[in-house]
Length: 136
Image 1 (cartoon, helix red, strand yellow):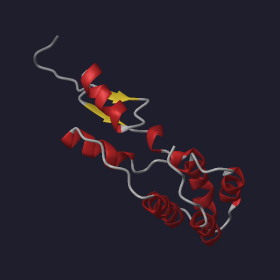
Image 2 (cartoon, helix red, strand yellow; image 1 turned 135 degrees about the horizontal axis):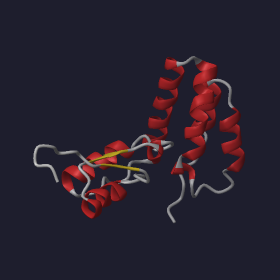
Image 3 (tube, helix red, strand yellow; image 1 turned 180 degrees about the horizontal axis):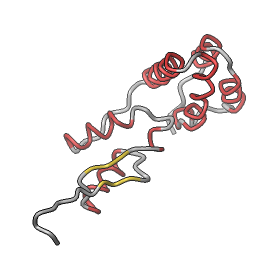
Image 4 (cartoon, rainbow, N blue to C red; image 1 turned 60 degrees about the horizontal axis):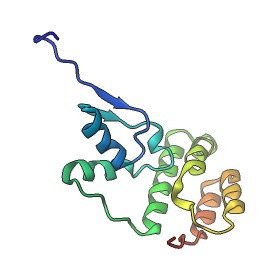
């Protein structure tokens, strides 16, 4: 131990929820965390983690439409940054990974259609037709 030097410990890996982030701080004593794959398909994780770290309370779930809007914003940002074709190709990975559509019966054809969409308008039309999942 060198009293002249402090090195922060950053937790990285498997930070996939506010609970996992909190566990990294409490159980492992990290000074900070990095979220990588945990945000793929869940861009709202940062908001959830921030709230949990500030208050110790989880955020109540938002309406299904709110999550769809967040994904749409992410799609538009990807297209703006790259172009429509490359932006949609890039975002497919996020759409395939999102847990948002779990619990929707017979969703596979819709998922396939989303992943095959070639334009933003085509993708948004598919997303707008998705029913909210039923609570289990």
